[in-house]
Image (cartoon, rainbow, N blue to C red):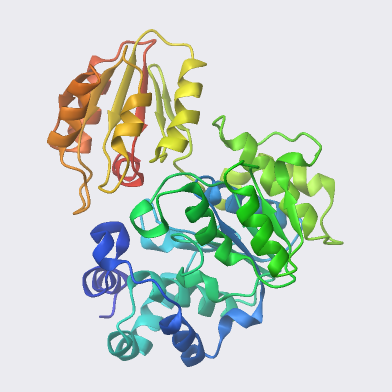
Length: 404
């Protein structure tokens, strides 16, 4: 394995990968990560980190915080998942993807350990990111939780700030089937004496967060209760308003002498430019209007449907595909009836079968057609859409990735 392409293929093939395989690749617990970090020389202890969990918005919030810190002159590592187009997107410094030469040398050097320790794809990636951040001598790492919080591989860090954006129903087979149970898992990133910012005050989860924060003597701040100066952002989507509020309050909680209001203003307006974020209400065309969006659960679709209602168009076309383990009944109950649907399956093993989607479409009286691939579904939508129509592409990160 001498090239990046060979190494990347090996990573995908050799190691369990939740995004592709689902439950069989989910390996909760931190024992392997602690051992891995010790083996690497504990690189995660060499920089200050900000840890971000939540059902929706954690990726956008992480990118916003990163962009503002960059504008303030800091060298910022950003770890997010999953990637859209290439593995290297997961690990960035000041917006630039990890050098492929580092990926190759890291895997070559430690391959025997990966196999012996039976690390998951995600554990290996987290370790790689921290090793890279240490080597590059960053000032801050903004670290997005992969799944849950308490048992997530990223939860070995002792951050200077924890952020939990919101709680909704997703990955219930791992995190629990009540908002209280899910909140308990996400609250696992709260650390002793370390402040935590909660993005949205929700009746079902407030007591959970208060109890855990109090036990750990962690100061708790409810972002939606704080008055902040209004700022614009280049991230489209109604759901970005709450993410922006959360990011601003989180940044204020850092109390950095070098960070000023002007950095906040410019950083929030240049999130896409600074961090290369894609797939969040991303406009791909104007006539017809084409929007790609990675929203993939019912809580997120609530915002998406509201935004669609506020958009001006003649006819609505939705190109949708999903992965298994989503509450599709709830999502389908939200979908507008006066639209044309193009159902497809993204090219991964976890893709939900199109027959399942068609059955649900019939149940909810949706005008739907099935297509063999995302590309064919998208082509059909663009062919059918008139000049003033609206095409929405989403349902899964993997659907969006295939058309970007």
